[in-house]
Length: 246
Length: 250
Image (cartoon, rainbow over all chains, first blue to last red; front, side):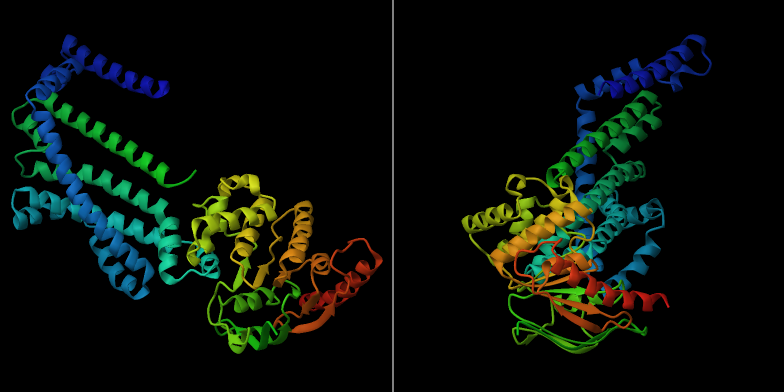
């Protein structure tokens, strides 16, 4: 904990030294190297007038909705693909072809299809996060040790018992990792989606900082995203420890 | 006859047969050891009786009905324990009881009874990762017994344990069998272990696995590893097994 605090203090110190130093010697235009003080002031103002919370909530709702849709689809299709070879042989080539296309390449398509409103963002996040979660879920279910299934079968497990009492708990660690990665990715791409056409959200807040030349606002947006990501990751890790013994 | 193995052979893919026609009848409450060099197909035979593998020829009958799949009437203890890592010791032993739909009180009573039987009463709340190899195998034995199968199939159950732990567990298994009277088929390549535990020792030939010779071990229920009669049977079996091992190296 202390070490972690020290690392943050060090980064803050370097940032302060560079930004305030630049202001003193005017190495480059001070306006493009915001200081911690400036970012702090912008943040306090954004908290006071509610813009920060409003934009944060907007982004978070989009992320949660898109992630939830993708998670349900990845669990269902990933599970099916792992359990049934014919379905796997059908799905895998398609998914492995579409998956390497950078999702951002399709973002304009989503805007054309779903407009500038919420639907395009939610759909885009669902599309982006589905692939890594599908691959992770399918791999974790596929990797379940056949010996565990044999052991359960000799204790009288039916097919339904095997699914519920062996496959699910055995695959759960891998599934949780897949969901964690998916959620991280959702936070990643929401900003991109909001850059390209949105009237609210953290990405929009950052883009506004660029449009109206307000660098501290850009830095604030980035820092809030970092904070959000680490809080969500910590929550998911805690969930993982609760679900999985030792 | 409890288990009837009739003309059972197994060929994997297009290779040479792993198991040539095996005929073996095992009586209720009998303890039979399958013994032979590595690759003689003794584990394959056990897997066929368990229902994990289908024989290429012949069939296995248990209580007169053919084996087609694994079932709760045939408990299995594996060399690598195969405990459910997400369940506690008690949870592992309880697994089959839950599937049977027993009441909570009944389950708790049975779990406590079998954990006491294998000497793990104090470790019920621990998880498999916190146990030594010997303790894990005790849990696996308790899990198999608690489900009250009439047959227990053991595939080199003590093969991964150190020599001391191995003898302690042999003693425990011998004691448990005197209380539980299961029909046990036990695969091993330790002749001493076979002589210590079995009513009959089935020595198998290698590639393809066939029955070479069957030894009856008439040494009573509690055995002394250093008694002259024990050593006598041990050396007789050793000579028979050696012929097979020598063949493999020719």
